[in-house]
Amino acid sequence: MIVKRSVYLLKEYKIDLSEIESVNLQEEYEVRTISSLSDKAASDVVGLVIKKKKCTETMALLLITGLLQKGGTNKSAGSNTSFSCGNYSLNAQELQNIVLSVNNKATNRKLARTLCNEIAQIALAVNIEGDLANQMRYDHPDLTTTEAVWCSNFQTTNPNCPSKVRDWLVNNYKNRFNR
Image (cartoon, rainbow, N blue to C red):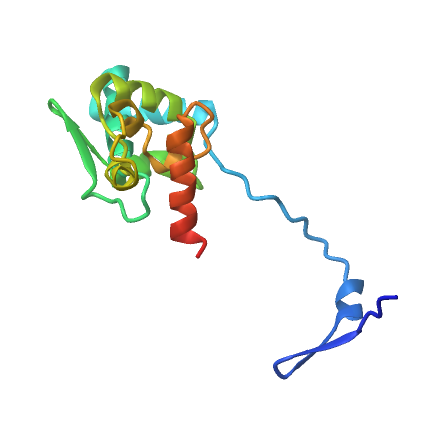
């Protein structure tokens, strides 16, 4: 028979577990989900980039792709993280401002998760490696050009991402944040 202790001492605190167990928490706890933007919000962001940069949809998507592949989803990315193509340039702070104008709780990373397959397709066409490609090469010197394109932090949960890359991204994340 297991005897349940009702009071535990933790440091100098007396914790009455029966009191805690009797509390009815009204708040529901959500399982952490990987969030992204709606397709409509992502489309609105692309439209605003077109308007702001006075460019075509293709050029807007190339600017977004280049920026996000270069680390434009990182919290520290600001006006110093940018991507230029021809006469066009976009920095992370500009994109973040556009994203926030569409959804005031959104981030560049949420946009990247929404457009992850389009980003990969465009990046493959113009060979823009992901921001974590060089790090992955330390562990996998045989990393192919195609795999290097997928080496972006926002591809972690994308089922279309090659499993070798996705596994490495997950392990890299765990090693950095779950110590």
